[in-house]
Length: 316
Image (cartoon, rainbow, N blue to C red; front, top):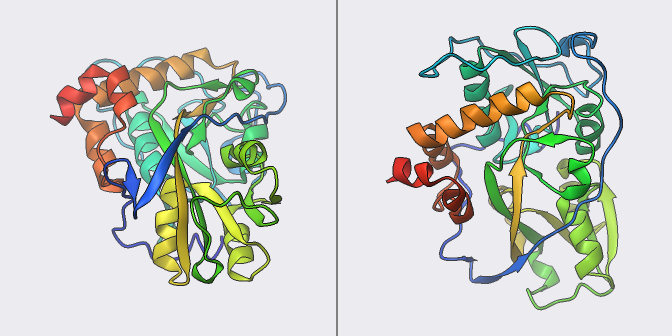
């Protein structure tokens, strides 16, 4: 799909330690993201995921029997027995392309959830704006992305319970000599349109010029091409870009208490309940922890452990 999506990622993980990363102080924030879109179709009347409008054809992993210890919850989806999943494919380590396949933390979680629900997942690549519009309109059953749960979004779509609490990062050319103390006055900041970083930048860097892009590949290309001064993106993504581009440096990281969840249609309460049931089961039986450790070096998000005590027991 893009230079980012096709790069070799090896066994790279996202890492930070003790609330600091590469000697950069982490500030506590809460970003507000305002974006959304329209109404939904009735269940069963929407087209199959393979015919949905997207930037690429969907990929479908091999079906597997449910591994839940009890009967899987009965859920309704666009097509019976299938789960139409929207992805961005450029959001390391949540969802990206490796060897022609969708992989990542969110993808592994989604594959496991679908298996336990007895559903066949089918992944369709789209942009952030595309999935924010497509999920409420029931083009997709769900999106496997690291998407912030915000009040404005909850007005037009449902979310699973939080499955991750993350952070943001700002990267720039080493030659720019930017520091965590800069206010980015007069600087051009690249970010993905509609992302959590979009609203945060407007609120906290009012003296900067914001340049919005459809996806991360376009934004990082603009940074490398000298069209922008910095790139504001999700924290785990910064790790990958710093590994890929030797001329880039981390300017600052920003810790956020905003949770990430899987978005679904407000018309699909059975699917929301089913996804939450299986997430709880994965917290308790250690599956979530196993998947998490494949993609992250840092400890489990403390707030997530606080919300789900069984997760701490499984992790121990």
